[in-house]
Structures are given as C-alpha cells and as structure tokens.
Image 1 (cartoon, rainbow, N blue to C red):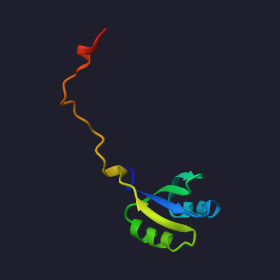
Image 2: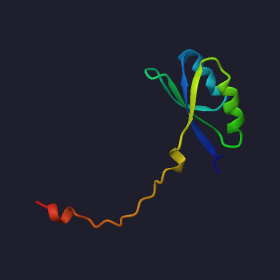
Image 3: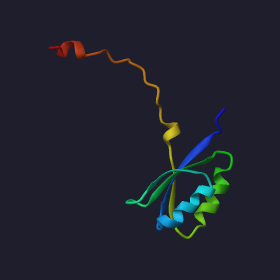
Length: 87
C-alpha cells in the first residue's frame, strides 16, 4: 500500500538552499541549529537521487538512516519484578 522509502540525513552548509531538497523527496525535518535535513526518498530511486544531491554545492555529507532496520517488536522474556517493590 505504501511505497518503500529510505531515510537520509543530509548535512548542509546553507539552510535557505536546503529548502530546494523537497524536489528530490519528502523533507521530514530541517534543523536550523545543527544544519541537517532528514528526508525520505523512494527506495527504487534512492541511489540515483543521492548522486544528484551529492553534487549540490551546499551539501557537505550524506548519511543513511538505519531506523527501518532497528527491531521495534519486543518480547517479554524477563519476569516482572514490580511485585517485589510494592508499597
């Protein structure tokens, strides 16, 4: 139903120019203090898009986000210890 997306953290030197990144994908967050942009792009076109973004003069560094690879489903194998600390 939803297209597969890949997240990237793009470190920039100019925040005004960084607003132009919206034409490459969806900009999720733009940090004014630390000068980075979190954006999502289509997984099929991610490599080509990052090549084009890397050529921009205001882009310093691009990092891939590993958020979708982190385990988010947890199991409760550890017994509950709250019964020992009751009032």
